[in-house]
Length: 113
Image (tube, rainbow, N blue to C red; front, side, top):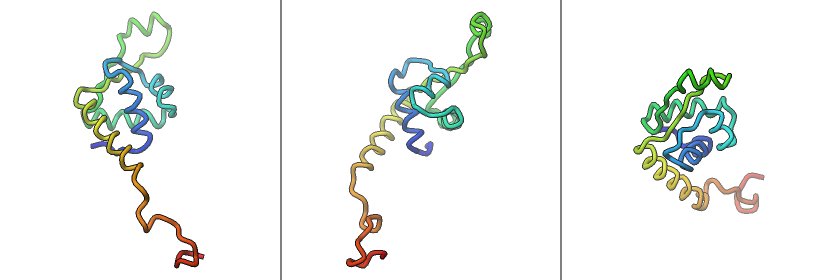
């Protein structure tokens, strides 16, 4: 299971906007609001986990458009299920109050001064 960092959650949310849609890396950067140096390692981990698959654009398309070849990513059916479950767990975990040891206490109550 991939690490569920905030950045990973943003990439998964972008992919889940339309699970059938193929998206290229820079498009995902825009949707997730993250730089390419963050997006591509996350996509590689998600692909290794089987949550995402990728395909290269037909060379004739990018040559005709006069731009570099794009690699397209799409979330798999397993990825959809796992991502929704993982995002729901991550959301629920943020709604819980912090444990007692994580809350700063005033010095008068034995906290740091």
